[in-house]
Image (cartoon, rainbow, N blue to C red; front, side, top):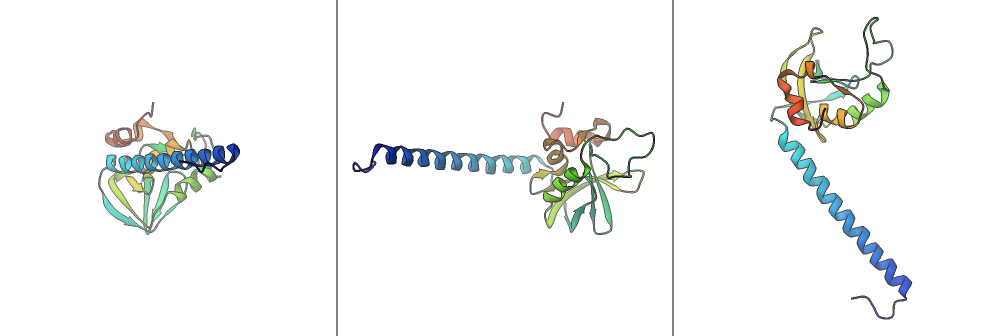
Length: 160
């Protein structure tokens, strides 16, 4: 119950603050639940440490180069080979988004190697699957032919 000595304006302000705080709590709870659901859908892997983003779809974790499964991100300047159709977009934004999603320890599921000797893998960090994270942010493109076993498609909904 509001204090009867409050002016109508003060009462409206208090009610508005209450509504804003309540909505913020609901949004926070929903975000926490969504994060839990995203992590729950990702397959368990082994721990990986000390990763940094090389570009929007590749990590370097110690001596290991890791290519995220199922996505293609814009190439850094000078890296789009002649004759290749490279993904359009800002490679610096794509790399920065990937870098921002990294944790000190993450989880990796290795599925093979590409022709450059990089490990093909799914990696889970603070925002869930990193391939999904890049796709949701609009800084990478889904490539079904690069998605071994449709692993990314199963974890990231609404790709098509």
